[in-house]
Length: 233
Image 1 (cartoon, one colour):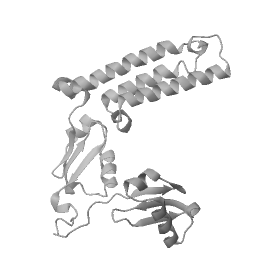
Image 2 (cartoon, one colour; image 1 turned 180 degrees about the vertical axis):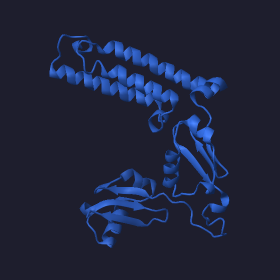
Image 3 (spheres, one colour; image 1 turned 135 degrees about the vertical axis):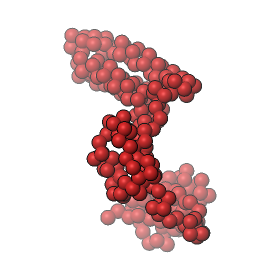
Image 4 (cartoon, helix red, strand yellow; image 1 turned 135 degrees about the horizontal axis):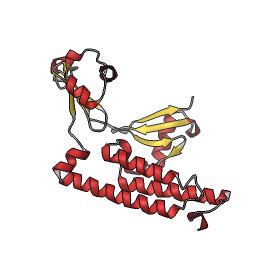
């Protein structure tokens, strides 16, 4: 465990062990912090990510620094982060500080310039986000909000929204999420069992399609039990 302590020099193996310990500990921390901090960095998430990255980087690049102090420091920071998230859910003042309400950028087809200044974004940035939503006309926007996570939510005026089958009184098929039963030539036995199918059924279906198992890149089954196959090209 000498690689944990500060050294005048480290061997290649000791450097590798430091990297391994650092990686495992960071994965553990990310798991504790939860998916919110991974999928979308908010104010508190951004602060903790900067601190943890900076603290862990130094002992992984400087043999004169030990790992113990960095791990203890990060453990305390993560504990404070989790407490911050907990109290944010409990106390309105902390919620407003760490998770502020969205800022109105467009309302009823009119740009809210004060909102742009508060969000610190330019009109060009706003127009770029509108283009991403296939919209180049501000007057069609009923409401656009700058979310705490740094994204813009855009809501079109109802008269400019596309018609849906519900609007037209049309019946639709139920939502269907195909289940993957073969990926890159390998059978997912658990998925087959959950679908109430077996290997014999799959083999028969593949024979009907006149394909070889080794040629299958992806195979899925829909809610009606139909097999859909994509082959290598």
